[in-house]
Length: 324
Image (cartoon, rainbow, N blue to C red):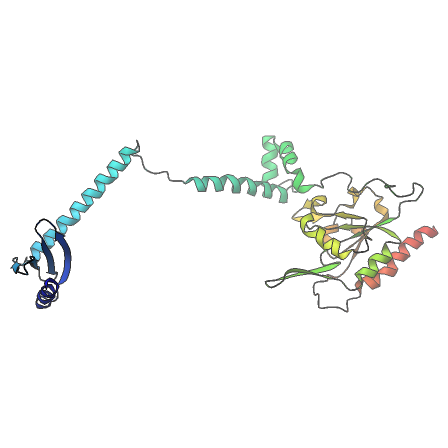
């Protein structure tokens, strides 16, 4: 009964919206207020448990009065917000403004700026007129800086290979020639896709090449790839264990942005070292020891005969030395 009366009154006063509906337990009456926001008319329906109801109307507000009412409400809300801000600042013990620079920016700067300076110095270390080198020489910290960056620019050891004769090698056996082989784009081609990830394809003829060269040379695989990436590839590449030594990025010398293979650090006679590589910059310290081959980058190319062609040349080099 009460609900039907509310609906009936609402229909007679459209367009109105139910503003609030609450039950007053003490009086046992249901109060419903509906409003027409665009004409300022309010209708209030009070229904008691005896189903009696009364409708009261308030006088409509003028346009200027409604505007003044809204303005006063906005001013009151602004004053309340300002007071809350003051109370919040006083509760923390300080009403100062927040810092202009966040801690995240400071931490990022503390990491990025020194790293950028180290990288700039490493790339321009060989240029004595570069700004980082001149600044360090002027400040007197160049030796300290060299020690700090030495691990990034020089091989990790002065002797990258053990002394000859090695263990399990007859002491009267002379040291053979050393064949230094590159890995990436020389012996294998690496590709990546979303489905399979990294895949490595052997260059055609690599198994026969390693097996044959192991009869004439001490084979050293020297790559600028980090050990954690290159080591599994080498294990799958050299099932017959023809490679005697493997050297990785930490054994290279970093010069002008290039990981250079320093043959003088191999602890072998440089005149008896031959390097096979597709990148001449990697052997820029010893260009006379390099036999440059074309890069092997397409694993679908199964007609590549580069290794087959250079095998007779490498064998001839060793035989000529023995004839002397």
